[in-house]
Length: 139
Image 1 (cartoon, one colour):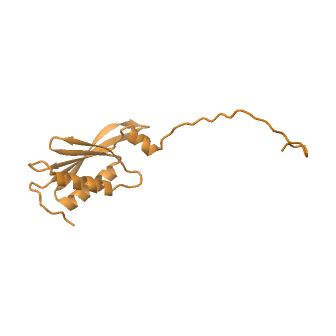
Image 2 (cartoon, one colour):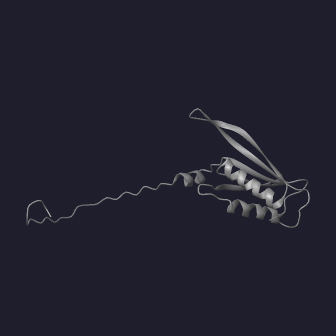
Image 3 (cartoon, helix red, strand yellow):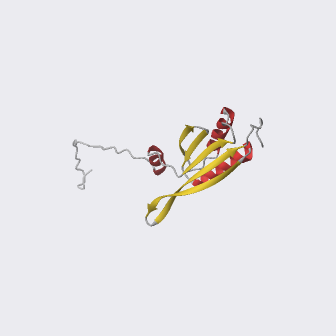
């Protein structure tokens, strides 16, 4: 309805709609292969069993927080590596694996670069399972 009382206007105009695809910050990091830490699962004097690797994967997935993610898993000689979104998340995974499967873990930060004057580190968490598979999970 136009500003004049009783006057109606009708017509057709072309309408152009543009779609722009965007990813949220976390999805963008995942798509780009971003990681801040690596959890390296190994066993003392042996390869981790398929059951131990499956349990570690289950622990990693059950430890996910709101902005945590696993970028990739890489099978390597001697075990498996989990590339994850943050060192806090990697520390949670490492602690829980050691608590449930035994062994120990250590962390080793390496300077990755400097961004806006702040040092950026990538942290490797080395999880060592005991020499012999214990055969049962700890509670």
